[in-house]
Image 1: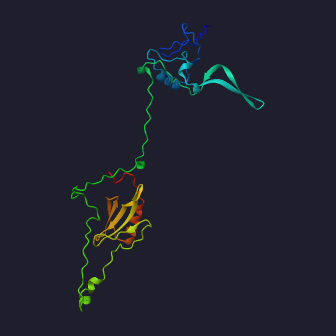
Image 2: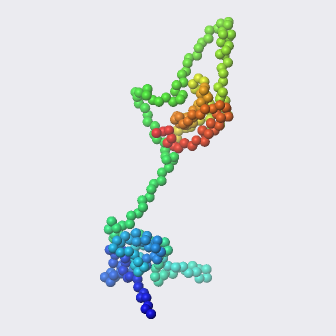
Image 3: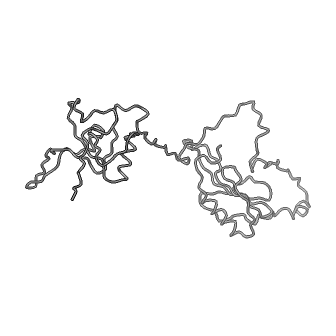
Length: 267
């Protein structure tokens, strides 16, 4: 019966350009066997990047290619409740150790490290700086906001007369808007200057680091034809056809739930 000849491990480091284990190199270093797990063996092979041969069970690699945290040189023994740390006769690798130190490697053989991507949250960015308009700049082409078209008419001085009350009696009592005095959240207010036949509700917000500067963040405008328009930071978001006051109040509550990031409407 033929006996299978046991093939011993190699005595020289498998990493190229290293002379560990050769007779011409008097330096004494510890040698570690490659892992038997196929997955980890492929990982070691990828890091070593030796193209002329593949790693086998007989290959060894010296300790110079591992970080100190991956090599166990001592072990702990507890005697009578006292923990003693003793030096190992032969250092050993930790189960998750991988070769990562290649000082004398050419640059084209060095294993490439995966670059870390920077995580950026667009909502956490500071709002863009507002540019100051020049004194002589032409602002005729600026897009008007929903409230820019409101005209302020001078008050009409009524001449006292005996029959003026009878002549102006139909217009003395102004008809209220169907959606006037809605039940709105505490942070919202009703706007006073709106186009005729309309009513608007809005929520103001102060600029960052400048509490004296307020701007309209959310606004719901209800026109005379029962069409509601939702504005978010001056930009029209949606239009809705309403028939009841409950629908109008529900639209305001839905607008409150809109969460805007820091740069919305500023670019």
